[in-house]
Length: 180
Image 1 (cartoon, rainbow, N blue to C red):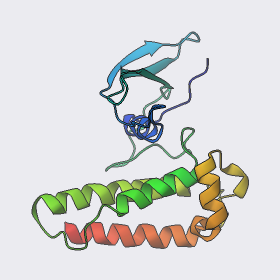
Image 2 (image 1 turned 60 degrees about the horizontal axis):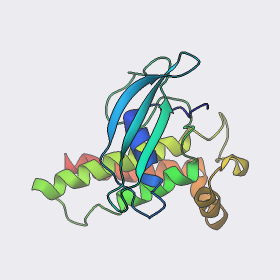
Image 3 (image 1 turned 90 degrees about the horizontal axis):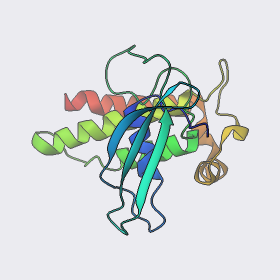
Image 4 (image 1 turned 135 degrees about the vertical axis):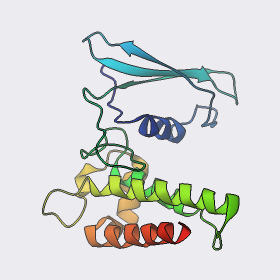
């Protein structure tokens, strides 16, 4: 078994959240451990019991050979595209986080929740952009590996253009800076 690479814990947790148990429950209390794979590489193994049906759940993700500590702020991964989620899934994640931002969150707990959601929406949009080839103007249509990613691209291919992704990202980042 060759587990997929997870560039960060945040990416691994997001993947698990997007892949529910067969009963439909997506969250479960997770315990993690670093384990050695047969080839000597290290992996993170997450285990827990589904709160919905009691079924044991387990996920194993290969760890990157070098942890990327470049940059500041919240990131799902380094400069390379994700191996866990396709660009359509990342765009759906960005949409979901942006949809959590209330119209008027100026202070207190609501503002903190809005900052967190916008930070994650911006990071997810950054992930979509990593699938655009250097010098390219859009995510190539053949790169979508999930049904939900392909369906989103088929319905709204313009959302995967670099200029549009940049405009939406800049709008979210502007909203984030207004929250302080």
